[in-house]
Image (cartoon, rainbow, N blue to C red; front, side, top):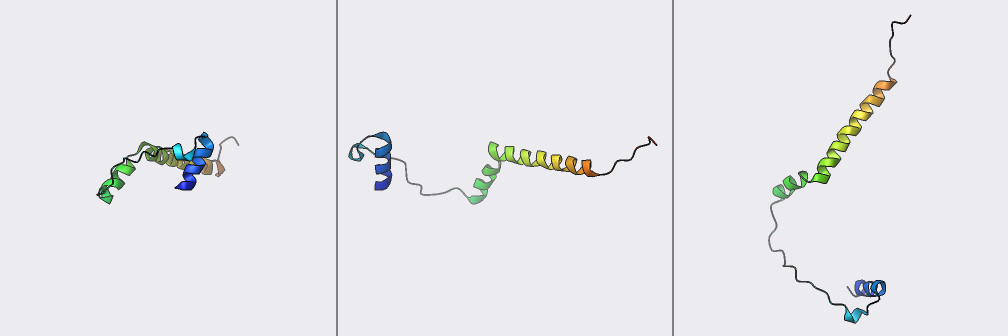
Length: 76
């Protein structure tokens, strides 16, 4: 913790003894069940966007593979 204060002091130019740490967060005594946390994690917008990006890339791969297949024409 002291090295972090010294680094902050160096970056901000404030003497480390003058820095006050505000640590008034309540202590966590009980966590939510894992199943509930996983369910809510799957509904996050960034996770949903990544799932859609994976699906879009899989379609691009399928299209690229289709382009490698020989084509048949009736041009003679």
